[in-house]
Length: 572
Image (tube, rainbow, N blue to C red; front, top):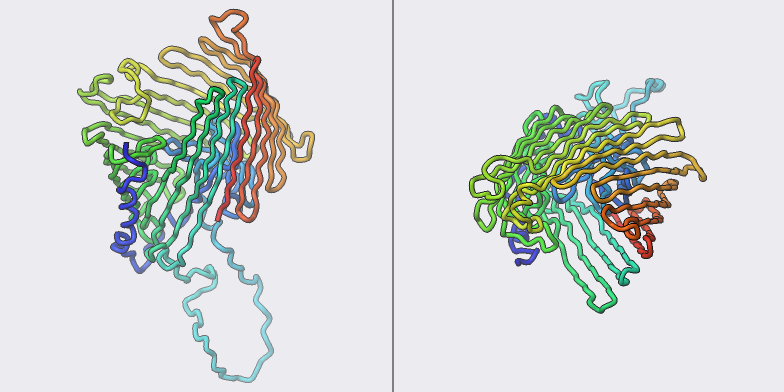
């Protein structure tokens, strides 16, 4: 097994300065392009709970209420949400999919109009200043000779100021460092698991004087398991998640080139790449491009040089707002230089601000005669389709369909499965989520879902009510009941949650009870009650600190368990 930090990754990135200087940017700015109207603001999740996630950016970063946020996972999946609460340094995002609870550190982004980030120029006075008394004619010697002869009344004050190119800006480093810790224990054994992650990520803008951006993300992991029989386990590992250099892709240069290790920019569904990605933006905002390189293994080792890939894509957008877009990409992989996967990815997004939205992504695998389990043909191996609408009064309705089946691969991406499992195993799920305001101070939440796989089927449902300004000023109380039913198990339960937000801090206390029933067991073993209590606290500062802590206790029939953790982040 090769080490995660293979020479190819370091070679690609260390060659960045030399390769970068071979690209020269044009000296005169072109006509306006779609990139001028919007900017992409990247953010991270600091804490989350069902339906909501707290992120580390706020109004000072140009984010506004009702902005759409996209969370991007390393495996290529994307999830959406809408900004519902806003502070200067943080924001609460209501998640479209209640089943998606992003882990701390999950990356996201939001497109904001450039005008929110631009400094506000002082408008001219509405009335002309009174004329000064007449003075004798004097011809003073003034050093300032620019009379702004080309400026005309009604133009913006900075209309004729030349935009500063990325290569002309001062070099700047921005980023974050973070620490994540979790301890889990139970009376079964007893057993204790400890996890600790320490990492950092940074962007070095204009690092080599050509307007490019050097990006790096990495972390150190520590895990320890303690069990009573002395068979303890401990492991440490270093991860390099990103080390890449990007040229272009700005309003001054329609060509974008990135090389190193990175999650593919144009079609993230193709995964993390050790290689090159090139794309070209057309005048209307649409784009096309290609990538080549090796796919690191999607595990802790991240070994590379085993799976070679070639990919190409095309993307259409309706206008600079990108409220409608369609993408088609094809990826060809080779495992140990033998032909492996032929993957087609198609995406459609229609995301107007105050109307129904629709997002859909499908993964289609193309098989040949050598694919014994599947046989020659095509198969939809993954599909995620969501349509939703959020109203100004807080109402929401969303419908999501998901499909998953195992693709036949030579690459070690999944646990080993049999040919029968490859041919038959699948999961289909339909989920509906809705929020209905019942007055200015309370609202109802409804979640209903149904699923089916090769062996079983089932359904779930939840009804909850949320009350504002309860118990404490600014408090939020949620009361909910839930149930699910499968072939062998069923669950009924309830949850009570109290939370409070005040400026830069938030806290929540939750209690949940669930009664699990099992089919096919005797009366002494067919029921398992579960009590869960959880408390969390989040805090952000103007200095760029984000802190999140939580503690949790669980009581089963005759066993107990606990969990505690923290997330600490410093942005710079």
